[in-house]
Image (cartoon, rainbow, N blue to C red; front, side, top):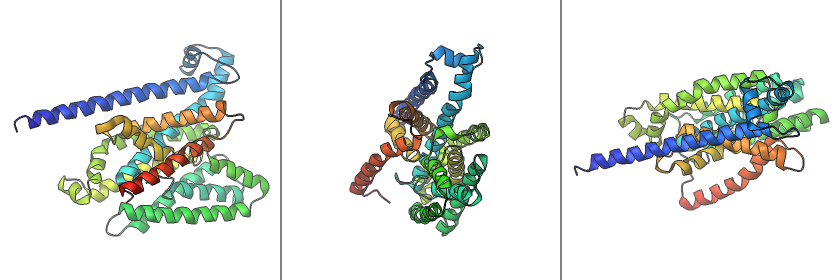
Amino acid sequence: MTATPAVLRANRRRRGLRAWSVIAGLTALVAGLFVFTMMIGSMRLTAEEVVTSVLRLRTDPSVDFVVRGLRLPTALSALTVGLALGAAGTIFQQLLRNPLASPDFVGITSGAGLAAVAGIVLFQVSGLFVSGLALGGALLAALLMYVLAWRDGVSGYRFILIGIGLVVFFEGLIGYLLTRAQLFEARQAMHWLTGSVGQASENELKLLAGALVVLLPLAVLLQRQLRALELGDDAARALGTRTEASRAALLAVAVTLTALAVAVAGPIVFIALIAGPVADRLLGPAAGGIGAAALTGASLLLTADLVAVHLMPTPLPTGVVTGAVGAPYLLWLLATTNRKGAGG
């Protein structure tokens, strides 16, 4: 019995060491992908040229134009959107205690899509106005879900079911709007709905980057409350957690990150669904880290953008690649979750 505290401390140290090792490895991977994204293209550049141009350590007009003017905005978009979706996805999955819980399937992304398509088709807006409408639509959809799911608290199972119902409703409205649109407007709406990291403006990127600086550390600070809520409300209360306040704060962080990511790049699917489980596999006993999930999301999206732009016969929107990879994963997840009886 006297050895038990020492064993627990040793296990805690091993989990902490593994978590920090995984985060360090993912950080190096993301940094490498971020630089590599700007190295390849019609004009090949070295890593040194990219880094010195991004950090403004040397002036070379042709290199600076290619790196800062053409490639850096897309790379920054993939990085920030991936970080936001990775963090938001794992918060939803842990909070609702369901591996299928993702912003893609609980109405937030569809709400953003409905608002954006309505703006394009009904009001002929574009650019920053579409992003603003998408942001507002995502936030309104999340608020509607929370109100509909509230019954003396929010149940994860009820939240997911209501979210799926809202997805079907929103998708039906999007389909109706597309049937009423002119050809040019329908093409513009469909391109936005596919999702691409190459369509963000500088102001949108600044807004998302600023939100990440604030919300990612806040999410990490709320990690303890999230782990307590995973045990169930009764256990969380016994541990001194204010369940509804903590749940509302975590949902607000996840919804805001998702809404801003969708506003910047459109509804890029499956990154939020995949990032958390992949990070948990890497973390092992230290599973559940929001920082690791965010970095995993960034690495997945940077890789998907590289494949979409440079490995396809013709450049494709990023959402096409994430959808092609994510759909088989979703089928596998549905099959294994059903066998385990863990579907909620």
